Amino acid sequence: MDKLVSSWYKDQSLPESYIFPPHERPGKLLVPRCNTVPVIDLGDTRTNLVHQILKASQEFGLFQVVNHGVPPNIMSETMSVFHKFFELPAEDKASLTVHTNDPKRCKLVTSTLDYDREKIHLWRDVLRHPCHPDCIEFWPQKPLRYREVVAACSIEAKKLGLQILELLCEGVGIEHGYFEHELTEDLLLGANHYPPCPDPSLTLGIPKHFDPDILTILLQEHISGLQVLKDGEWIGVKPIPNAFVVNIGYILQVISNNKLKGAEHRVVTNSSDHRISVVFCMNPAGDSNIEPAKSVVTATNPPLCRVFQFKEFMDNFYSMDGDADLALQPFKL
Ligand code: OGA
Ligand code: NI
Image 1 (tube, protein in one colour):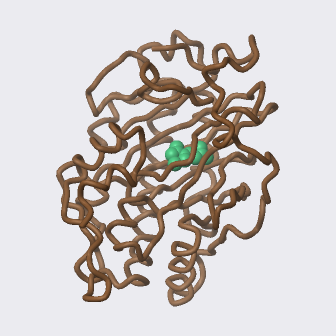
Image 2 (image 1 turned 180 degrees about the horizontal axis):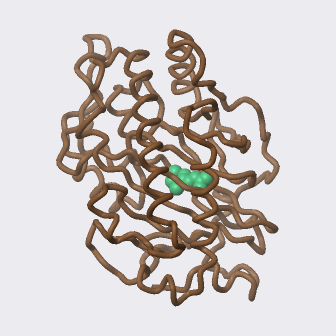
């Protein structure tokens, strides 16, 4: 594995292999850091919530939630644990950077799992692991409270995600409980670390993508970087204390038969601050069948694709370099 970006970023200018082609570069670094990304107060009445979440998911595919009931200390302790984790000396992280195909194991990589094959590297390091209790024995043991804190946060994130999915089901007309079991069986954690970058105008933390999941619940701090594409324009997602960012995943778009919109988003870097984000991806089990829900398919809204297994989609997703539209192509009707 190549060296984590965090281990050398101070020593040199931006290497050529991090420079994106002009049309993919961040462009205007100060995009409207606007209030237009919807912020939803989960303490509102159910009727209002169903309406607001549906609207946000159709227009943006991404929104923030506040007043969600997740204890603020769990959120701040989680961020603090990841700060400590990324600051650990290299020898404490070495065992996590070894190459393994075991899906239960933690993986700490720089850029992506495909570092050796990719043409351009991303300005980030990322730790990934499943959150299932059976996998906790493989989680980092340092910092000391990692397992305790991350387990508590992942339980809260899943609960929140399921609550939002229930509201979405009601809004779209999918039966109650549709997402409760197989379709959200695998909760995956990704902790991204974007160190200060010598030239944020030329590179990206993550280029434009859809999350290939059902729903993503994201925790960030006060440092900006996440942007969402709306009507051809990049919009900054303004950090709000104690909020979670919620992304409609590409698979949820498929299940809703395009009634909900997956959010295309990216991450830009900055030259002064470390940014850490923690994403919880609600994923279907590999062998679960994905198809447009029967209840949303009608004569005038025919299914956009046939049934497929989630793992078939993910195999395509990786071989298509993370392009979700191309990954779905073989299943389209
Ligand atoms: C991701 C992602 C956004 C962020 O990990 O898929 O989009 O703000 N992260 O780090
Ligand atoms: Ni993403």
